Image 1 (cartoon, one colour):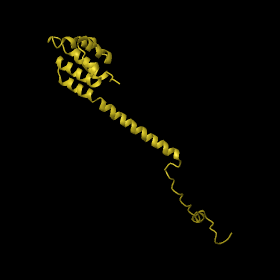
Image 2 (image 1 turned 90 degrees about the vertical axis):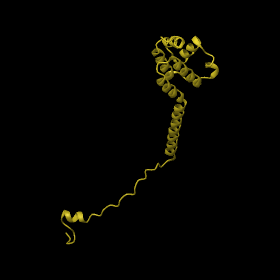
Image 3 (image 1 turned 135 degrees about the vertical axis):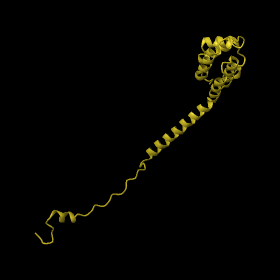
Image 4 (image 1 turned 90 degrees about the horizontal axis):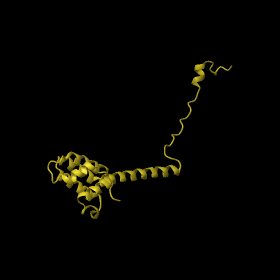
Length: 151
């Protein structure tokens, strides 16, 4: 053994050289495909947000009608006006404006499943004050929430 060579483990460890730090790894996508997928995902998110906003705006008349219905109390005449306004907002005027009586109730049934008891209340309540308003209120709420708008 040579005199300058360390003979202990501590001496050997002291002679070790620290390895250099590797270059930092880039987190950016390295291929164009990832950029395309990212742009596609962002486009889909923007389209979804736009559709959600358009749906929310298109149903503003529903929210207004439900608020007015809550404020109407048990007044059948007010509920009938609210239903008519909502139908005029959702369907073409030519399909709604001329309807009355059984034709009006039939339209409500075809477009949103308006209940039979509510239809009778809608026809008779404005002329008979002793008709209870709760079937009409329930039917109006159901129709306002479930009817489909005209295409």
